[in-house]
Length: 111
Image (tube, rainbow, N blue to C red):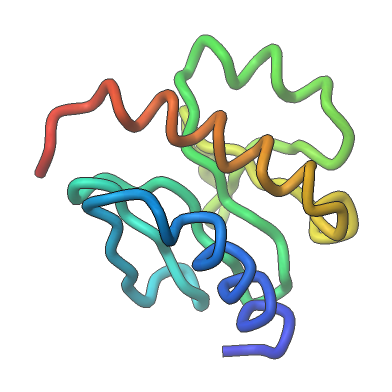
C-alpha cells in the first residue's frame, strides 16, 4: 500500500474505533473498512476515499467538493462515490463522509 493509503487508513481506524462490527480487508489496491460485512469506505492507493452511499443520495452528493462517481475501468459503480484526498485533509470533512457511509450501510442486512 502507498503512504497516502496508509495515512488515510490510520485516520479511518481512529474514527471507527468506537464502532462495533468493523473489520478491514485489502481491496481496490488499498484498505477497505467493512461494517457487518458490508463495505463502508475504502482508502485507495492514491489517497482518495471510496464511500458507499445510497443510489439516491449519490446524485445529490456529487455536488460536494471532491466527489465523483466511482469507476472501475469503464464501469461506473452505482451507490459508490470517490472523494479526492485533498478534500479529506480536513478531519471534519473525513468524518462527514464516514458518517454518510455509516448511516447508509447501517440500513443494509449483515453479510
